[in-house]
Image 1 (spheres, one colour):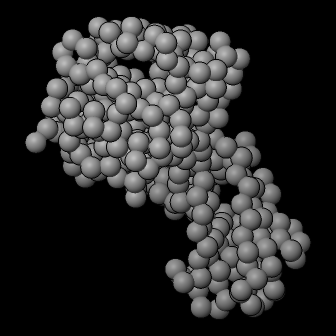
Image 2 (spheres, rainbow, N blue to C red):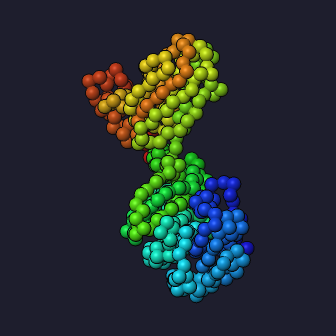
Image 3 (spheres, rainbow, N blue to C red):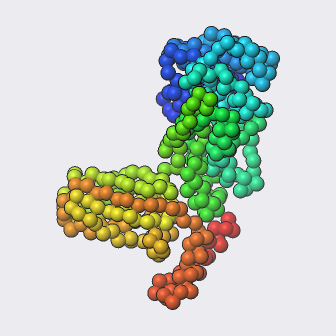
Length: 396
């Protein structure tokens, strides 16, 4: 069985399910590299599309051709960079041209993209999925002097071209293709074929990888349009960014617990405005706000308000307050509001988040200790303990 002879999974988010969701029924499609035709079959049988294909592998191409109007197959006709397709389909224009996990196998993918522009209808779109070489698992292995090719995945041993989000967007822009939409398939640091072992990375490195906005993007999926058709805009998906959990906990006299928790999520470097419905809770005594869970941060708490009126939140575990920002060296920063048995219908929280590194913490601890207020804020023992933790982390 060929490693690319896989079933189409429409139940979960993956590059092909995203592309299928972008293609409208009863349209024309030019599909490059269909392999055994799992996408081709869906487009033909489920969406009633007219599909032409170009496939290098003879066995795979013959199977995919069962679902195509026409097919170019084999080392000559099916080789995308021989450009025999350009002659075959010179009189055709398409609603969609698809490169699903294909461009990374080509020697000069930019030249191929440049050529396909003229085969688009005025409103046509090029749909592309590529592996993300900037995934956290790749960076983690590079830190350990490893660049691991694998049977499948980001470093599939047949891949000869690699991109991150920014440089692929730049290439498209330079070719006269406008990025209309971006989506992504995600995978966390420990769940890819790169086989990163938990507990083997320095804690500081793991923390830095965790806060990268696109660090968990495993594959990028781009919707491109021809600038010559007069379409110039970008619509980026927030789903591409790395989300972090946040929550509020409500104490009605029983303390804080998971049963009285309202969960949400946030991004770094963005003004967060969150509104929570508290109408199901009576006689609220205290509210704890956990603006982000799982990483250290600098936080500017802009405003907290409720149906009762303005509320004052007390930071429970911050390291210090600098330039209107609360610094938290804990992975569970939180604030508390004393409510005193009032009925609150809604709670609105506005804040800005930035990541906080170990190096920033150590430098700030030193400054605090050396300042005239240091003896009230930090003891020599606390400084030595924190420095020791950092040295231990760096030595791992």
